[in-house]
Image (cartoon, rainbow, N blue to C red):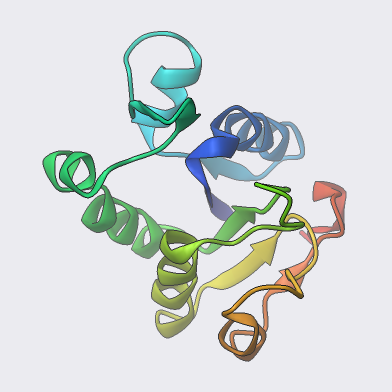
Length: 144
């Protein structure tokens, strides 16, 4: 199964770690090459904004990340959303991840959440409507 890894850029190191773990488990795990290059110090995939990794609208447009993620989702069997704690919000899923989940959903791709659905999210109903599979923090919970 080919699984594309996504998440908030605050979690970029953990996202690359999850991609590596998926490969160890025998899946075809992958991530946008810019993010892997960022973690490996090859290039800056996104600038820091207020001391937190992030992408401004200008930066997203310049690198065409929204369309790139869409194309990568289409090339995958599933997506994995790395949803960790961010700014005190447990299992954080932001606007970009919500869009990416929607892209996967309308294209009949499986949606895995590393952790549980964020109960404090303004998008709770939308997230639940896409029937994501919660892995409860353990990638071993993905069935082959």
